[in-house]
Image (cartoon, rainbow, N blue to C red; front, side):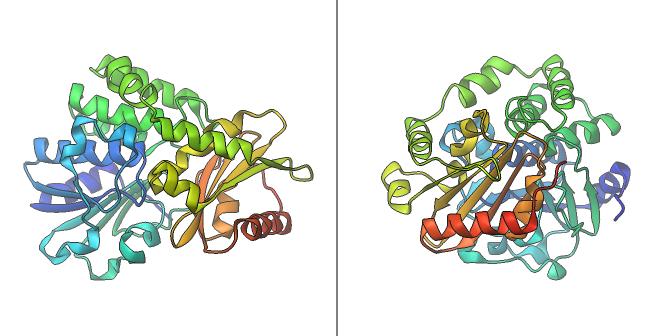
Length: 334
């Protein structure tokens, strides 16, 4: 599958008067940063109308970022009359099946006037009329750095801080194995163009973690199990505990972070019981391509970090199911 050029995508966007966009379901920092950065530039440079929505909220430590006001939360992309829009633009959305999140809806892309897909997940199926997918990029925001540089867009403080959010969060603050030097290079560029790493990122995001997330991690650590054959650490948390803590699906992804640092584990996964499903998250630090494992469960992501959903079942049964499937397909290194 072949990428379109940045210029082809930009020329199409220049033709559009109304553009619809959406964060992906249970959005993270890269979804928030890339979508709001693109909205900012489209309105500033092309003077077009951009509707940016998200049915799911972002994690609590991201909600106070001032550019969250650019998003209409609680509105699903399927709620819009998309025939009124010249183009629907998707950023950081690795699968067309994961675009809509309201009551399990899936958006029928064939009914849209035009679809542009910009992404960095290796499981992306090139579902747009125009596509740019770079699976080697550490974040969608990193792709946009290249995109805007190519088009000679001016980087100001507002643009730079939005892009820096996605680069920092999707690289695990430069700790993931996937091209950390490239993430650092892009981060330095954005800091040189106005982003303030301390005040725009560290203080509001990394140093502002809600207590409930720390408690979530504590519960996951208390429940850790170890499969010696796979050198895999795993843990689960019940819906009852999620409810007690007040954890959203977007925040559930934050629980796995420190598990990846344990020396005995080559890779880890967590299972979080939600109201109607089980959310799974993989992390890898020994070159194991966990995106291929997530794909076995209908999910996707990156080589070092991926996610999936399972149908509702007892958590112990879900753990056995995941381990059995991993042992069946085997581990592939990146």
